[in-house]
Image (cartoon, rainbow, N blue to C red; front, side, top):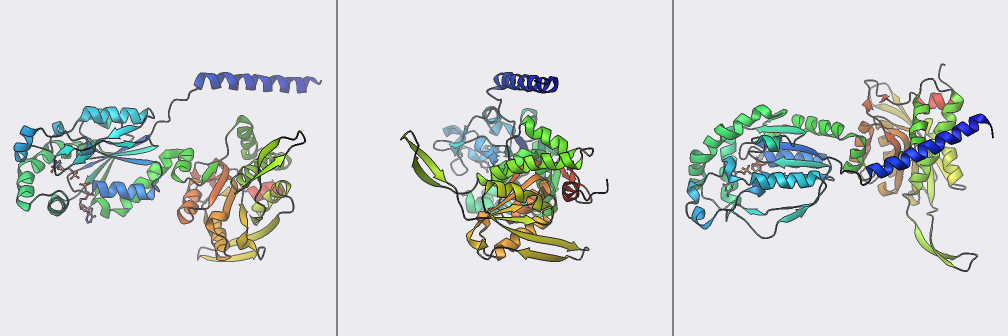
Length: 455
Ligand SMILES: Nc1ncnc2c1ncn2[C@@H]1O[C@H](COP(=O)(O)OP(=O)(O)O)[C@@H](O)[C@H]1O
Ligand SMILES: Nc1ccn([C@@H]2O[C@H](COP(=O)(O)O)[C@@H](O)[C@H]2O)c(=O)n1
């Protein structure tokens, strides 16, 4: 054996051993820390409304909303007799120790039981609601920014700042309709407890907020910015939690090594093609794993039964010209005789005009489509290509979009518009620059792959 081969083998064994020992040290892995957002503000300021808007923009998955109201102490018989003298807006009205214990459990990946608070009987009723830990937790309530121990749990603190007259009007409306109160009760409680406690405990906590949202749910701009910020913070793998149809192939050192080579500006065309092809093959294989299958039992030469599956055979590849054509060979190598169509999208200037060329099989609507484009950047071409496939009758859920790298902006663009389309990629990058290039990215894929770049 040559010395170089021996050295490579020795390194491989070393890597393998160090991976194994790392695995035993880190196993079981500590749970991933959730991203915790606190949303405070006066009564009826629109806290719940703002939270629901954030949750719906984050596509619900993976976001858990915990309401501080659930942690109100139940009133005793004596307290109930004098309920009009009870201050529900004082920090002592809440069981903060229980709230902290619940948050600690969620952070440790444990499910919790959230008390079921009833505003009419002023008590927690029935068994609590079991909730599972989540990647994003929103803790909402008038006083969630008051206690420093609760505040310290938070990655982002928001204060909803709404005019007090408007809040009082909303509170009268809500409490008479939903909480079984009469107008006189609401006004008395407001003057005696709600307003003074707002000034004493709630408003001073505004200084701890990272973001103040004037006008609550009416402030679309602030909510959009908050959602964008959360999405950036969540990072690449959390995008998979937000969008359940986004899949990143399992990262190994081999894959990281291939990415290092194809992203390196100094890599030669020959090496770029070699390693890009290897990665493309892995993405294609992973993508094929998302196709439907049927069960099929077969008999092996030993006479035993093997409970197998049959591949889905009604497939079609569609490459987005021209970079996508680099992925055709890998698809052909995996799927014998697969039909391949083409789409060309060309943006002409900035006036929204575009040229579209397409050559697709006539029966494409009855096939599962593997859409091929190595780089998902802003999502412009992807959205156009998918829209074209839909117009040909391909169901959204029959499209699997394969790429090597994807920018978060492109993922949002595709997943928001086509939530049933699956995206399979090998890495999610950080962002786009002003020229809509993926950062860190790998440059012009088509030029580097087909050797048409200047160097
Ligand atoms: N922007 C808004 N426009 C109109 N009504 C609103 C708006 N935001 C909230 N509301 C209403 O005001 C009441 C209180 O809102 P909510 O979001 O529950 O506030 P909070 O959680 O701060 O108590 C609800 O009845 C809600 O429908
Ligand atoms: N039994 C109770 C408990 C609480 N309140 C009032 O609810 C307000 C907090 O809820 P928001 O949705 O408005 O944030 C708080 O101001 C309490 O006065 C109540 O009236 N009865």
